[in-house]
Length: 74
Image (tube, rainbow, N blue to C red):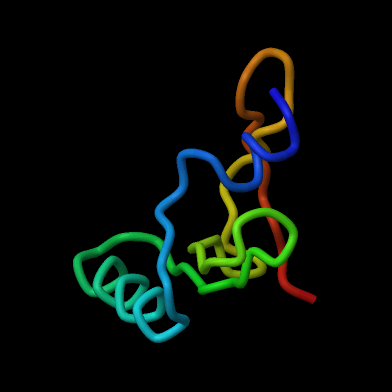
């Protein structure tokens, strides 16, 4: 899997930060995880959603699939 595939491909893309934040809030209101909007400057130049710091539940980059982790906010 390439960096592009991990970083950008398969993720929802939003043209504006406002649209991404609106979708993140809608997900949270329906009981989903807390996401934040971030600008993908390296690959597509659009906006994606990602876990907020301390809210991620797994690491994706392993040979055998996701590894459960517990993140703690400083």
